Image (cartoon, rainbow, N blue to C red):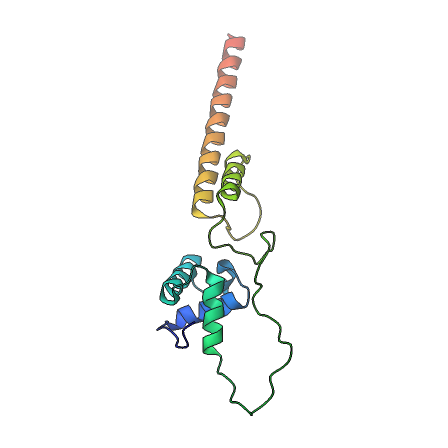
Length: 163
């Protein structure tokens, strides 16, 4: 492990500090008042600079390098210090954000979004990804088209019945 800190921008440092505290990209974006895409870009750049594969590992390295090392003899370190990052977060955890979801989970989520009836309801903030938004618009367009065709068939049937 390198003992020197790579040249990181202040934004990258802020993102890594929050990742080390267990926040996901959406929560970090809200705290820093930037877009989720900006957070992901900063984290990806940090990964390249540190040469590590995961955001958690980059955050651990950053925090361990950033924290000043205590001078020997100044004080006795605590015997037990809580770990700031979970080493193995479960996928069901609300703060777990895998760097690359496995293919099977991704496929199931994709099928659920396609087969969902109608657009998502509720909430003042759109929490859908770009592909989720596109699928919601396609579903809304298809449902609207089916409704219009059904209405036209009913009207045509009513005119035939009256004639």
